[in-house]
Length: 122
Length: 185
Image (cartoon, rainbow over all chains, first blue to last red; front, side, top):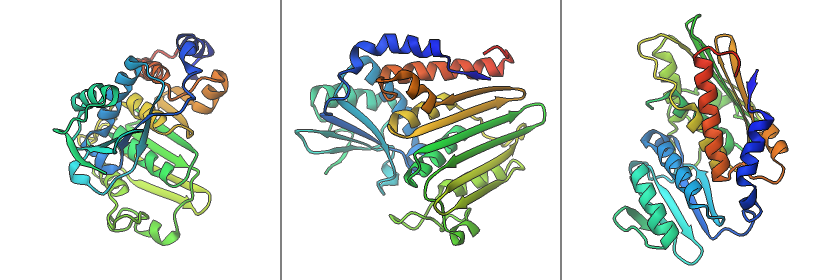
């Protein structure tokens, strides 16, 4: 039966060993991708995939990503909420992978809220 | 939903919402027997009997935030239109098992889609939840168990973006190998 081999794991581990000790520290930014039926049907998985790639590239230890359910605003899905430690939570609407990359690069990494894509601040 | 893997993502997320800490996902492609079976099982709190009776009615939902639930209704419709069925087996306190079957070559069957993205999206978005994913194509099988990976990785976090990236690639190439009938992988 095919499965992930121990060798595969070791390779992954070697590649990431240097940075993981830091990842247990406190999170300063939380990114929530809303993944109800509505979000998924509207493309939330593509948004999440883009976010995963950006995260791997950015190599920041203090960013947490979580999936959550529907917020009740299905018509504006995919929604993404960014909660920075020292700012108000911002809900972004009608996201796609490109918008996610822009929000990640500008808002998450540089702190510039992308008001064009924002639905609300909470 | 354009892909069956999105239905799987949706139903698995429901299992997590139901308080499960381990989700089993099984995809069985019988390309020669013209059968496709998808099973998603969780160890969450389960559903009461009265909800189960009308499970594919969108106005029956266990959610409390609003009165409409579409997830299982959509899956039941997707299975029904390709000569398949959806069956829900749930025991309060034990968990829920959803089984959907399809005729593999039915013209209306949605493609399975990107299973690797579905699995890693689940792992990334739900740290602390375990996933057991098995995928069978005719005689060949692939299996991924995050509990095994966790025990091998010791201090390494599964939701680490670099790990996730490698996992996605690993699953993708494993499924390609399954599909091209190389039994070696």
